[in-house]
Image 1 (cartoon, rainbow, N blue to C red):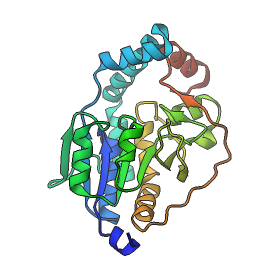
Image 2: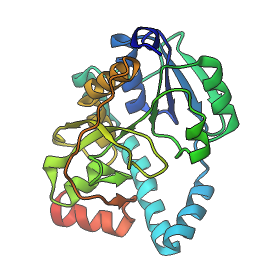
Image 3: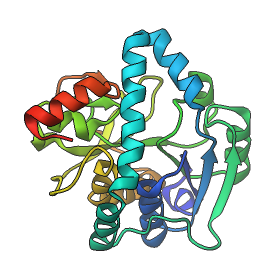
Amino acid sequence: MAASESSLRPIVVVTEGGPHIWAIVNAIADRVGPVNVILETPESKKRLLLGRARRQGWISAIGQLGTMVLTRLGKRLFAGHAARLIAEEKLETEPRQGQTIVHVSSADGPECLQAIDEIRPGVVLLAGCRLLSKGTLARMPCPVLNYHAGIAPKYRGMNGGYWALASGDPQNFGTTVHLVDAGVDTGGVLKQARGKPRQGDTISSYALRQAAFSRDICVEAVENALAGKLETIDPALPSKQWFHPTIWLYLWTGVTSGVW
């Protein structure tokens, strides 16, 4: 398909949602064109816990669950900080009136593929959703990109911004847009952005902070995909997958290094 034809095709974002994701969706809509959002149902906490216990053991899984609960409480306790961040960065963190949203049970399921077949997009951007299987990826009719809240491949997986700070590597507090393959954030890197957390930022607000300085790379990657001009870069970094910190590691790191 010629670039001129591709550029007329719709944009799809597949996500579980969240304020930081809507900030990116709205930025793309403003600067590129209307976005069709496929909104998947989040996995249940029970299913997440069982899956992590199988992969990492029950001690780690329970510890990670503790941090997830604490993070949720932090969002409530520090809602004022998040509101100031949103205002200062001029983030639009809610769906707009008239936003096209298709609800599906899973990004890696037949409902999602059916919706994409009907929309016939020129690009699909994944942003905070389940991993796609090889079978699902093989049926995608266009480039599939992923917005990852970390600098890949050094901080693949979960909480990339937090782990950069907790590892004493603040220069890699950033985000990545990359091509999607069957691995965890292992596809070819297209764009990266780096920024700095500000006073009062914690694991509860890092995603918003990262979204604020990552709108440009998401817009540029989507534009390039529609124009058929996707070029990867080599970050020249080691590769490691990270998971949610356990509650005891999170508290220890916060007390000893001030990274919360």
